[in-house]
Length: 409
Figure: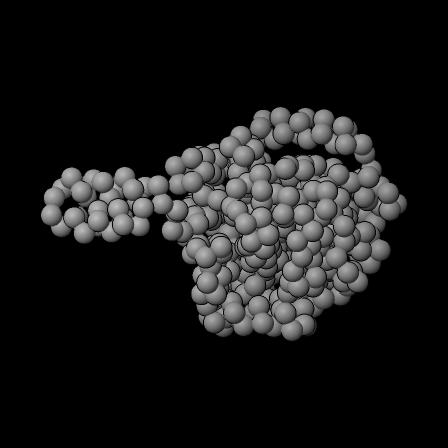
């Protein structure tokens, strides 16, 4: 075969027939790169949150390529814009899998985009690495959840708030299922819900919501508004005299890059719950931040989702090298128990699911757009996508009901 290859190659310059023969032979040779889909919103309301996550993903790929690649092959990232539209996310996921033949997809931000892409990767038996905290009530065999489940973010954040900020709670945001989880936790810890308001993704009409908060007089606001609408929300809170000293807000989707890009001080003094904060003081985090700064500039802030996205690439790499293959059915078993010493601490993928053991931390927003860490779990917490306040069947039925309700909002 070697002689025939060189014979064909030597005849390329002589006749067109031999060029055709070369193409046929080379079409059966191994693919020279491993394609990876990077699917995030680069435009639209969620771009402010997703662009930094895409950049962290690309940085990890660059590092791996510089170190020799995976299984002797370079990684080829295909960066695609989901345009803050879950339907486009689904369309692009299908194109990446079917047409581009990617080995896996890394991305999504909002729950609607994740759910739409989940259906696609399940249909085509591919993989989605999802790097954002989520409301749980889901456990797909084709989705690697590299950020937090409810018991690793929402539940610790609510429990800490009830203990330190007050018992009367107001809920605002775009995830009705997450609100149900919060309600269960508030009830379990002896708190009360004095108000709740749904805000669709991208909706910036917050005046009426703030008026309701003023009337309800809660002790604490639980906020899961995503992206740019946080700016008018917090601005209106301050206009109406609601400060962190009077009524603090605990947020579940506001991190360092958003604070920097919002270019406002209206959130200073409020709180957030994450696994990762840029202010974590350990060697691994300092090294990680230095890499980000070298790649994107010293003023580039780092977030929980960025850390999870960066970790995702390395967890995938380790599983592929263990499996000696990029095929989904071989990579999935190899993913279980994969561990890394991440910037947040030692984390690993669970033994019986593709959920990840994560830390939980409470942070207070500072005027320099960073967080002072007030509390941290001692070690990574086992993932629990279904909170224990209801049965799995009850949660699944509720998810369907709320999905139908959201579609009519």
